Length: 536
Ligand SMILES: Cc1cc2nc3c(=O)[nH]c(=O)nc-3n(C[C@H](O)[C@H](O)[C@H](O)COP(=O)(O)OP(=O)(O)OC[C@H]3O[C@@H](n4cnc5c(N)ncnc54)[C@H](O)[C@@H]3O)c2cc1C
Image (cartoon, rainbow, N blue to C red; front, side, top):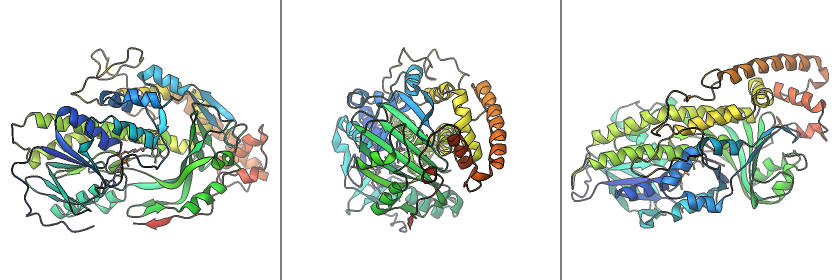
């Protein structure tokens, strides 16, 4: 990281109030939509192109869908993407052990369909709906910043610069703005951002993510979780395309400044290690892989940083809160964070007279309110995602039992209620009209006739919140199953080579009913022989 450029450079005295945003992903594009509608000057700087040919899918929950509807994108998104309907949860043999119309349940609760589409199409559509695209500048990589008393000067790799009142880092998980902010914060106050905080984002799972042509045998407009131990498949099937995520637990966790990177050859080898595994009653992963359009092997970082702002810089989206894709909440949370910051900027702007600018401490206080408002919701979404990720991968006995015993016992209704209530507390853009869907069974918490007190901020913590009974019952059930399987696995000496309790229990289940060919090659806990290149 470069040392700061001289801070004696001064800004033009006649400039208007202006917001600089780094990154034209979900959060950055939302900023431009809303700030244009508020008449606030800004620029979004994107290092590459908008909507690159990368990644897999984006699914929408009510919390993000309502914001997208406010900024005028929902009609175009609905026209492009059919919603999901069924959620099938499958064991290592590909057979369903739990299935329900989970996405219809979410429509009932929040009034929004769970639209699912390719990530690049999602970004393309959100970009297409932007009234004036000249606010978005592509090929503009942020490399440095000067955070002065009177504003920021943002330096770009092409030698140009932009001036404004603040810099918002919507530049994703490997954020440059975050590193610049850390640098300035530690210069102003040594050890303010500790090494521990910098290393608090952890990569525990890696994922082979991709897009394939839809093949028969997995169903349509459905999501499939295929749960092994230490490995899970997440497969979203739409009529034209299927999106897949194969998540492995890594042998070793990675933290900043290391970045997990794998080559295409390593992605091929990773795929080769799972091609024989069933993903439904009649399909193995290899059939999908044969029809792949593109795939990458990526690390799935997880973490929430403690400091979201410093001086005139603030972070929003994956740059400050990053979760795995398993619960499809990352982009939705990025939209939520952008919304709260947009509201703060709008309120601040409305107090300014012509030619006036907010002081650095006014900006700092607005950023602090933003962080305080966001933190509890982000922690709730993060915990829910972390739990679901580990349940998918049957990560250890607790998660194995939660997935294989508790989940089928409780059914999906408590989860739909919990997610519905989490979504109902989402922020809205205060200065844009909002439509409350009459069909929604859960009232939005900002609806005039909402009765407070029913919703839990930590909906997935068992024994807490409104699903206490179901969850407590489920916990007791899971304990009984745990005792049963531990005893069974100890007695069954022929399984002594199994690598984990989850693996043992899966074997017991498979032996009790499933007709699986070549169980050994289906041993899901086995790690494919590929190791990450640690880059910085
Ligand atoms: C495989 C996968 C599937 C997912 N599925 C879902 C889902 O279904 N639903 C959901 O809600 N979330 C999902 N997520 C999470 C979601 O993609 C992210 O949370 C979301 O994209 C974060 O948005 P963002 O705007 O913060 O960052 P990003 O979308 O990462 O955008 C950051 C942008 O900043 C640009 N940039 C980076 N550095 C610079 C720089 N120095 N200067 C200028 N520009 C820069 C990048 O090019 C990029 O365009 C998924 C994630 C993955 C990995």
